[in-house]
Image (cartoon, rainbow, N blue to C red; front, side, top):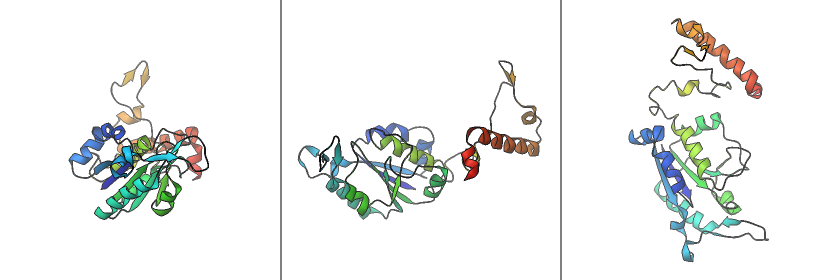
Length: 225
């Protein structure tokens, strides 16, 4: 999979993609992430990419020309399965979206900044809009990083144990069950005996029941989806 990201501050994402699972995914050749500086695509003086809103109001808006230049340049190099704009007013990102996007080959993500991007870019180019929650960030970079991480770990071969992603929270509209490791007893609390007896059928039954109970207690809304 290849993911291009357009940003005013691409440096914000570099560390996230240079460590841990995302680093291994790229080293294995299973994922490539390219961050592009929007200022490289502007024709305005002083590398300007934003301007005041028509109609007045606080906050600057990313102008359409630099974004269109960047998008068109990248489209000349590859065909994108989705052009995604990270925005607070988009549908809320979830595991189902991550699963779907992980099956794509080429993705382009646009990071908004300041007050957002000119609406005409959304009309002309954007195919998907995604929010990571009902709050506002300084820009779309951190949100894009979340989406790339959630997608990237689902690519076959990225995780050492591919079944790990299948038991993550939300995969079956359930939260993941409780997990334990050594020591057996910690500050008076013991690991459930069923996890220690080696009976894999009973262990799976316990995990399924525990996942259901945790979901009913913490996120009952998931059971109604």
